[in-house]
Length: 88
Image (cartoon, rainbow, N blue to C red; front, top):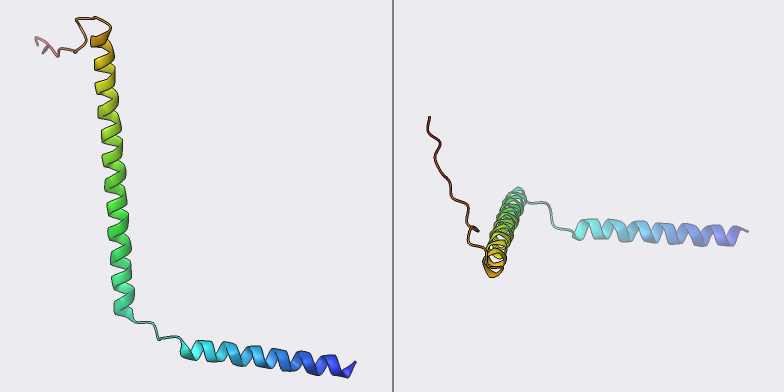
């Protein structure tokens, strides 16, 4: 039973050496790069929010236009609402 224990110890020691070598090979974190990455992420989030808002606006406008066309195509004459100011 002593043989498998030695083999496991060798494997564990080898894996630890590999992990240390990988950590040593990794570049050190750069604060400027982190700031640039944060700015890029914020810019991407803002762009995504603008695109979602623009998409919602277009869907709303196209739906309104489709309802107007359906009304006109059905032969109605009072499709467009007219805002009349109230007399106060």
